[in-house]
Image (cartoon, rainbow, N blue to C red; front, side, top):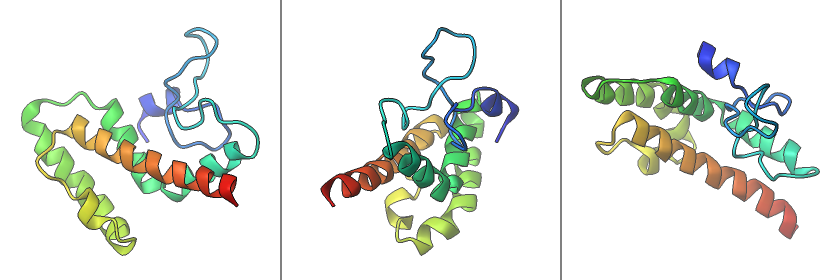
Length: 129
């Protein structure tokens, strides 16, 4: 995780995401979008899901903290995919998440949508049980 990402880390204990939602003004830590509005036991479940997918959260945080030139975008996506492909392919997600020409910021958004779906699966499955 970059220094900028650590500086703005989500204030929920052990959450690997950056805290971009500030509840009490701009001073102090914020909360990530995955924990925002989460209550009770779901807080722990969301955090565990994010930790389970820490390889993805790491790449998302890199995308968020990087201000890259267009010519660096494709190289950054390729490096990110090189780091993620083994874990995602083993889990059956390789085809769904393989890069398809998106820019580095778009790649980060794609990973965020994937991660949000995993978080929703976790909390939805508990509510139905």
